[in-house]
Image (cartoon, rainbow, N blue to C red; front, side, top):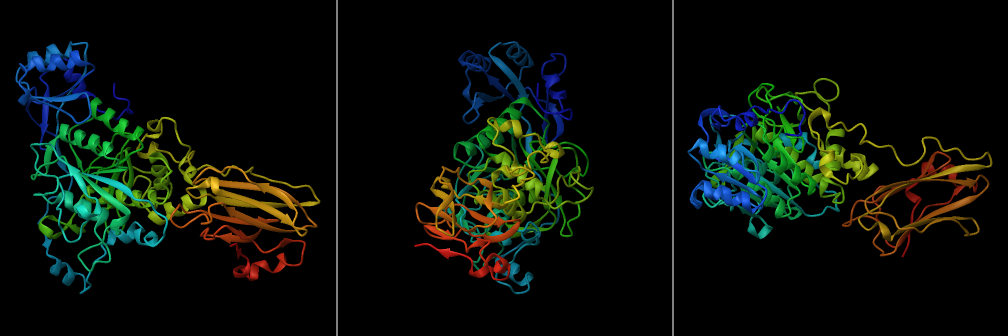
Length: 574
């Protein structure tokens, strides 16, 4: 049984288990064409099951193909009796249609630009920033330091390797394709190249367009060519590409494709990837109705709807209870095959915007889990349509800077705890409810000191080497009256409350044992301190060396003037 909610379509699974009904295939991304005994997916549980499949096709290896790193075969069989026989084999636990999968853009009169045409169309600017890049707030965190390299997989029609506006092999681009599907580094269709450009077209090169992640040194592409140059391919290719992307270390998989219905083998593939800390993002579909498209509607996949340049729901974008978030998807200009550029529309164009933002944000907080990043993206999405989550927009339009700021403020726990089984956190759509994930700080809701004392508060976000951090409070005699020389966890938000004598005069010092502060290349650490509910010092960068000391505060004739001259507060240690 598929472990999704009531919307999961089980009709085809029932057909598979009923000998009286011919198993149907889907071609043209959902159109029933003919009996599909000729192409099915079969999952075996042991070698006896594998042997049974091979015997069923008289060991003709041209009729079978093992999906990458799995116990699933795509099998071509013409005799329905063979399917009935395999269905009854105890060593086989699933038989599913091998659906036809297609790209999810909107057919239109193609408008393809050369680089010169793009320049002239962009008011003579050498490089154009498509409207969607600003809509998702990507430029607002481009210049923030401290990110880690992240790998993004694009499962699509391939990649125009050598395009002047896209990363190359020298930048770490790599990929994979089924032996019969063409080369991953070629794209005879253009769709895959368009999606890749939205994610990572090179910025500041006086060329074409810019992507969400404009700095090619901050990420690596891995390309899974699951679809052919006509923009179609078998489900078996898609699942193989997903497995390969996971094996190659991708943290994000962008999928602007869909077709068929839900099935157990696909459900398990995406669930397994999710449990390996991979975030999968897919296009919601372009039929302009409330149908569920797959893979977007699986619970372990983020379903992305499309909006236009005015942030309105795009007319073609499917709406349902699995739509989780939105991105720009109408008239999106990006890279295209043969070194060109094209404007295209569809939820296919919206999904890579969200994938790019997810990568951009996650690269700054690499210790967060996929589920935490997912939840932070929906917590901080720009609400549109009905208040809160709705079937057209999900939680709203993805916002890079707002997601980044929330993680700076609260750490990874802003997206909920780290589930021991990551897939437990994958629900999808409006049921991917972030309310419980947006946790309060660990401090009590009310901290009250005795009448003779006043409250000291420290908010600390550690960097990627939390164990190097410690802090202390000293009084006017330089006596240490409070010391937190403990081992802190990395990239975690801490809140400390202490009661200090009202008559005392104090300084606060933070230490880094390595001598490089708590920022700048090793995470985005920061801290702030309050005394008697008044701000004493805020270090929004964490940029110091071995130590940093606040100016004095308390009953010593200085704290009264602190708010008027904050720039004089810190003193940097050696």
